[in-house]
Amino acid sequence: MNAMRFVLLMFPMTALAAANCSSESPSFSPVTQTYEASCKPGQQIVNVLQAKSPVVKLDFGAAQEITVSTHSGAKSAGHNGRNAQVCIWRSWALESPCGQSARQESFNEWDGKASCALKVPAGPQYVRAWQTNENADEHNTTIVITCR
Image (tube, rainbow, N blue to C red; front, side):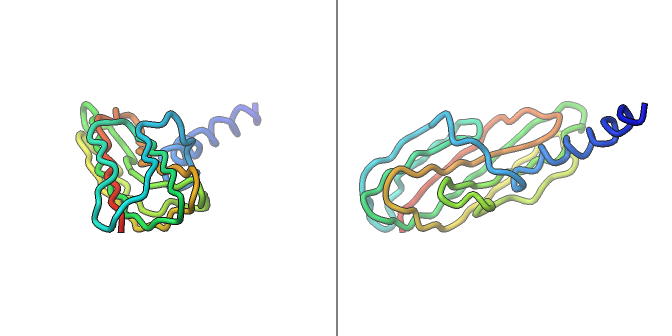
């Protein structure tokens, strides 16, 4: 009986941790778009307008500075959506996201934005705009990448 109580007590904490996109890095698949070339400052190289937590594969011949921006949304009937957040993760630095929105505790419709400036190492690397929420449906997440 004590083991059952422990499981029931731990479940709510686990659900909350799962709804926080900044606490654990996501996978980097499937790839939504790939960019394999060099670029000039100010050149927009990725513009994914309709996706769910999109992943972009970048493959530069030399280290490249970029800016990543994302705008994400979710819907939940009856104002019972919780803990929506969008975070920008990169495969070469998994300690924490480079940008994240504030978490929305309760909502019917939510949107959040995040951005960050990065130096991408040469070779295949991945960036993901990852949305998490509880009791809602992710309806759209954009990701725009511009070279600096």
